[in-house]
Length: 411
Ligand code: GAL
Image 1 (cartoon, rainbow, N blue to C red):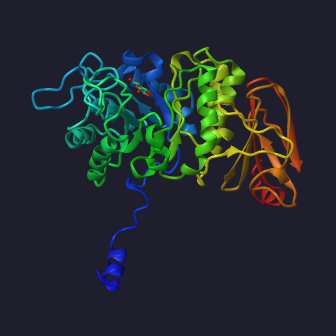
Image 2: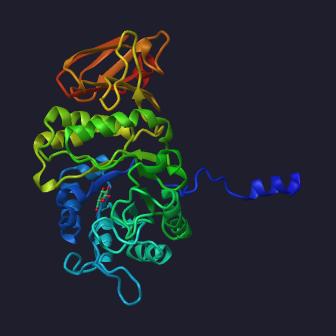
Image 3: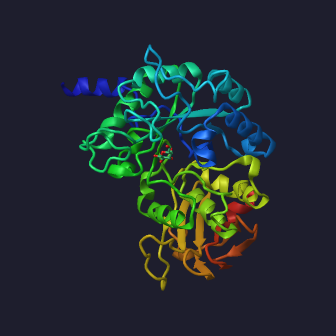
């Protein structure tokens, strides 16, 4: 190709930012998923519709919670004679389209779950070898979101185990055909593609070319150890998150009684500032007032949904101890379109946590700052903040230049 031909090609081919740049997923997705609620038993129309009603009655839809996602076990155990997936009639008495239509009419979106192997993790039909026809089926049902798991995938072990420890290739190999099938229908339907390869093959380094969000770890089991394991790992990979492709720290496992209220605040706050999708993994019929207060925190949601889409990470103020692997570091910060967010985490000990704004990446220099703390609602002006924080609790502070603040009356 000569140089003129190269210019011509460059002018005529639309700019593709990533392999799956279909214009959606520009902010971390928000919603609910059935898996932590009652595993296979929650993969039903009954749960999907009841949750959609709750999104409205609890004011969650108006705060941005949008996707009602059904996880593993929604189909029958085998395909029909034409090779199609069959929604389990006991769980979907009127089929799936009736549910997506109803959910769409409520201003919400609907997600389903599939798997790159020959079976899903719970042993239902996988999508391997059926990618294009299965995506056509999803489109015909009006499905908006597709989570794609990593069980029973090509493996050197024979027969393939549920979770392969000796994979026959990189996970990219079996995520590509589904990505391509989704790209193939994008003129008809733009599907959000959520990669669930449990952080294998450093998915954060290539996930944006394959999907809109990617699980960067094995499951959140709902305990404090999971919050520590996943939350601490988010610090090292913040640079890979951005509009169109976000690290997915897994569902928000609140309301299960495995975490106390401090731990729930830290869990939600850390997921919010690291720009993880905010996907509730709990039964909204049973949500407590204290959990509801946390998940309805508009200030935190706005930080998560900020148009800049940059994830916060740790920083080390002068005199602070170095981070310890696997533990939640106290000091976090990240840029926002109109300021900076600081997270203070009492991940390992209760105490007074203080920061001078001059030590915070993105603030520095001189100037007066205004701040607001998102859990207590406290506001102030000045050059520093200081909070006494109970064990495993968190404070999230949004900082803006005081002058800008006056004009925009942000707080
Ligand atoms: C796991 C996945 C979970 C859930 C489960 C369903 O592999 O990480 O989020 O989807 O499978 O079987």
